[in-house]
Image 1 (cartoon, helix red, strand yellow):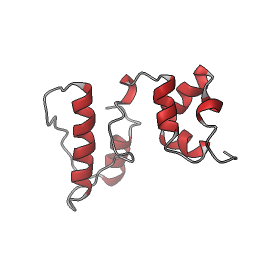
Image 2 (cartoon, one colour; image 1 turned 180 degrees about the horizontal axis):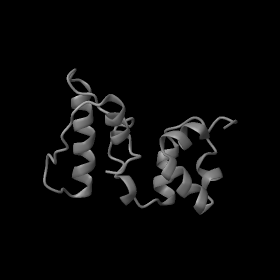
Image 3 (cartoon, helix red, strand yellow; image 1 turned 45 degrees about the vertical axis):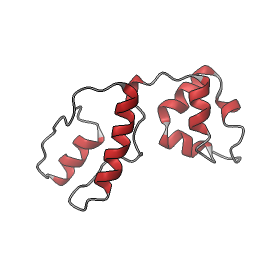
Image 4 (tube, helix red, strand yellow; image 1 turned 30 degrees about the vertical axis):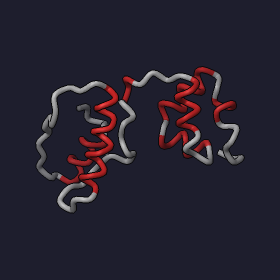
Length: 112
């Protein structure tokens, strides 16, 4: 964990005690994606927990390889580029670097 991630910032702000635990052995990527989504959904519905995840999970962090098809699929979730940029910045950036941003965002409403 680094000092700029959302978990560290949250705990530095709230001063609440916490303990990081690993709840499973390492899993194949597809199983890890689904388990993350399931656990986020489960713990968001339990009052005693404060889930810090903004997204629903399963993105695999920096290990995701961005392809045209993957970026297009992600972009389809958004109506405006500003949403895509905010919620899936790494994918947006990868699409921009590959020169496919205009193509995969063609369905979006005008305006950033």
